[in-house]
Length: 459
Image (tube, rainbow, N blue to C red):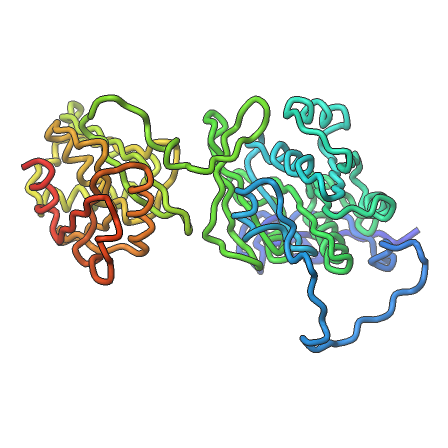
């Protein structure tokens, strides 16, 4: 039996120490060191075999780029267009993907849906959280069926690799990485050392066998992925599944991608029979209304490389409890304060005694400064109680001097507004340089000051 010793691991960054420390020397966090049992005489790592030949493996030798052969199928294209977009046109063979999200957000549903939809590939779905009967019930609810999708209820990594050797899958899905246990480490499942070791074994397997592995990971209370920070450095791609559990829409973001852009996102709608892809998110983010209402404007924004039209809702009313309230949902409250100061100083609107409530419809959180003009016009519209035509949209940044500033990729924003049937878009005058307005049927109003926009809208 191997000799047993204990070590102290930081639950935040994974730093290990032979003795307890109050403060981690690596990440400077307090009271994060936890004692875990580790094996002193570890067996030789990499004890799994992908082939049953039993021949010893030849040591790797350095190669030039011309000697390295490239796969004919560079990426595995799934039936989920949103996932393909986020991963950069598909799953790269030999890649290690980590997807995290809050409990109940739909991570397991998404991965099972992907596994069952890949009918041209053999998929091994390893679950350490749900029984086989529970997974079957979920698959029946989603009305998916795939004879090449194998379900394995296992947490020991040596048994998982043994089943991989027998089934020879094209894709492996792990649900979740916190439930796996490696025989090389004697600490409990979900500990820092176990998560690191299991991820390292999966990474070695994916690189040597050229089989992609998708892992589901838990997140902590502050929204970051559970386990050591080194876990995100080990994997090739990190995806974040976001959304409010009480709302139907989910957003899949990329925070790290070695094989594509990190500025893409996918949008899903949670339904009783699974997740539905939302190919045109602008239509669901804009509420359907038959009459114009004050305080509502449409902004042309960019979420990564994807143009979206979102609805800005404002409510301005007289403050009745002394200090005026400034509440914003989905938009930076400090930027809201700045825009209110610009409207009062440069526009002459007395908003110091008014309660201002700002909301981004659809539950989105927006950081694009191109919605500044839409926010300003929405607040003024509610303050003056004058509605703005619902076929008008805005795409410009507002400076502290009241100037309307240019934004990037204005062509994409104009094209999106034109595609959805908008009649007029307000942009910055400085965006006209190099822009051929004759290519668009939508009317383009260019302004350099806020006064020009307000004069056009409110007279």
